[in-house]
Image (tube, rainbow, N blue to C red; front, side, top):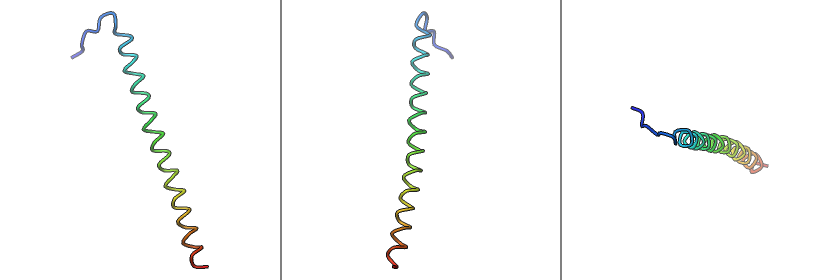
Length: 54
């Protein structure tokens, strides 16, 4: 079931596509950043744990 958008089909569908691309980019950037921060946190905790026994 496709809604008839008439003469505004291209601008409306372009806006939807742009929005979807931006949302996907934000999700990917968030996941990459979360993984990087989790790795840094694990490194800091490992250094702290090994430094505490010295």
